[in-house]
Image (cartoon, rainbow, N blue to C red; front, side, top):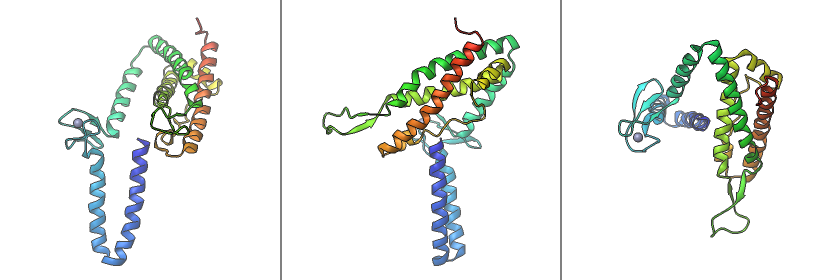
Length: 227
Ligand SMILES: [Zn+2]
């Protein structure tokens, strides 16, 4: 999603820049007309084609939430927000005992996922497995996608655990987990053509993931959750 925003951001800059050139050449009126047309095109793009089946035109159901009529796939930032809101509402209805149980389980799940994910960030690049490639050819470690997914789920899990139970929140905070720090930008791991970009992003991400793992381990221990 960060990637999409970036593309939209840079498209906007390009349009503005192009607009200035056009204004000089063809007059302000035609520039405004073209700019409006381009902006209309841009706002449709996110709905536009279905990411899942890439065929049909999607139908806008809510501002920034579209559904594909042929395969039912839902896309747009609006869907995730609505899902998050609904989940939050459900969690808030739990009894304190249930909430506490949920929080402890989420903490242990996160610890497990982070332990599994952290090592992959040490090996973001692997030797190319394509037999036609030369010896020094490389590719992005295919496990990286899973590792980033697990790290993201675990990060969300820790935040949710803290929200559900103040003891868990305090234990995590004491162990160095920051509830306000967002998940790091991992797009360069998958957008990068440059080995050095991928490696430096993996190094940075690993520092975060490792710090969450340490916090989860320490919080679970201080809460006496280790069987
Ligand atoms: Zn579709």
